[in-house]
Image 1 (cartoon, one colour):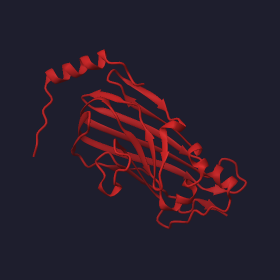
Image 2: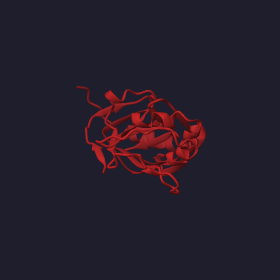
Image 3: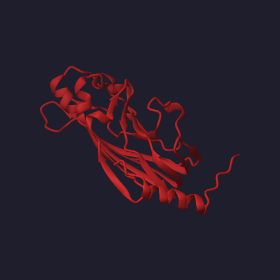
Image 4: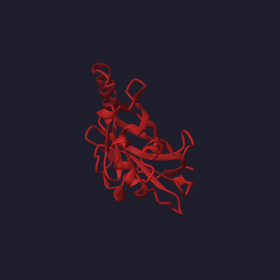
Length: 213
């Protein structure tokens, strides 16, 4: 097993780089603790958590048909300099027809608070940050810098009701077990959710029907 040692000299050098470089500006927690090495950073004892709320769509009821989710990823020991990452949200299979619509990207709103090396900053996601795939939403994050631990916190809202208002015949099947969502921070947008790292968070909705008649 490899051991990673971050000395005081390394931290001092990293700290000077942060100052010298410009800044780019029912929950289920994954408590698996392991080390991860990215292109620009090292994380030890990383964990992720996802929680949320689904408000079913009811035809004619304003603001119905909404998914609100909160994701947190943190590492107790980590070092990163202008680290690149994406927030990747796995879409339940039942929502695939909604996700195919051009309006789906516009239905997504959100923000992420990320470490800068000298504190934290909050970024509001724009349409240019968002890419939609058949089974996931990929949101590009600003570059992050951190020493001696890091924390990312994101809030997302998906107004799928606005799409059903326009296309009322789009189906969203019921799921007696609830709808399963997952989220993770990763540089790889096409990461395999079956082989996810320790920063994955999972959430299963209490609601079993996304559309109420």
